[in-house]
Length: 54
Ligand SMILES: [Zn+2]
Image (cartoon, rainbow, N blue to C red; front, top):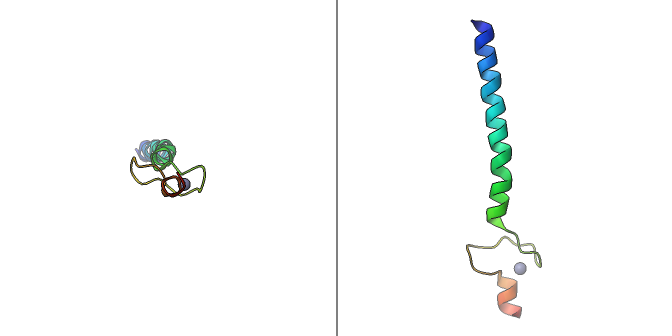
């Protein structure tokens, strides 16, 4: 019984770790940092540096 509980906890932790790894790159993709100035873009608008310089 105790072994089953331990195995279940291990599986649950590993699944959470995998989900965390999958989520992190997704979050980075949504952030989308500007390649020019490195600032994170806000929403769908282009970066502020491009707006000013055109
Ligand atoms: Zn920029």
